Length: 323
Image 1 (cartoon, rainbow, N blue to C red):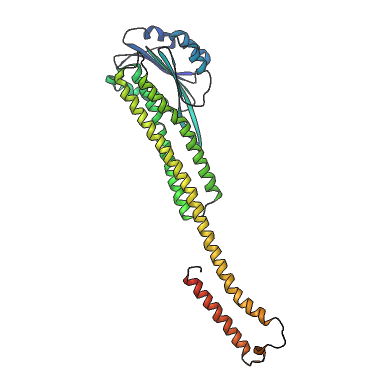
Image 2 (tube, rainbow, N blue to C red):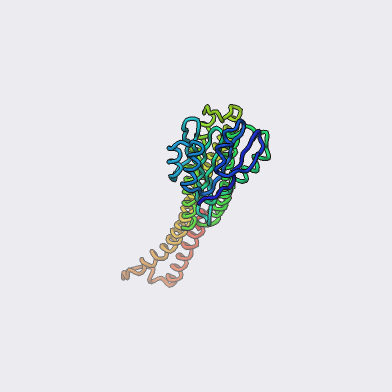
């Protein structure tokens, strides 16, 4: 059984009274009145009861009883049905809380499923702005959509801070498996955010075009404002996906650079060691007639040659930055 977060009647921008769910139809039929009902995890029986009261389309109810994967807008005569999603991050795991909105002449019904922030804050903000609330159902619809969009901003700031810290860490340290896993998780979350934010832009554009009795033409700029915020969110998601891509590209380039430096050092030391190895190999071939073997200072001469050759190679590699 769900809970009723709020159920009240409004007229000319002011709250008239709180009501029970059974009283909604009577109040919604009064001129210049509308009913605003907010539900949390409603049951099928509660939704069916509201359908009988407000004449919700049977397809809208059937749609409401299903769980969706993307935000969407459906119109049924002079009423509409909206599905939107609010993001929620729990222990690093990104989740989305579904909210269903029914709107028509004389009523706005919101049904929230899950533990996203309550829309009671939206109600308080609307009641504090009676001049705008006087517009009626369309302003409430705008306020609910705006609240959903606002819920994305703190999460985007969190992802941005994590990506900045990750970029700095990649610049200072070698790319680890944990870094790669973190980048993959962030990219996956950003892709899911884009999937849920994208349809909101289409919904706001559609609301600007719809000719419904309860949508005043003077409210269309407000829906345009929501559409602008959605576009900015999409830009932020795209930018942060690029940051994640650049982080792993930078990490791979730095790792390749570090490996190249190590390989050059190995090659330089191998060349230095190759010189005495080659000289020792020549004198280890056990030929009988080698003039240097009869020379009194041959041993010291060869040692001097080895020392001079090794020092010369070392100095040369140091000069070119290989050591």
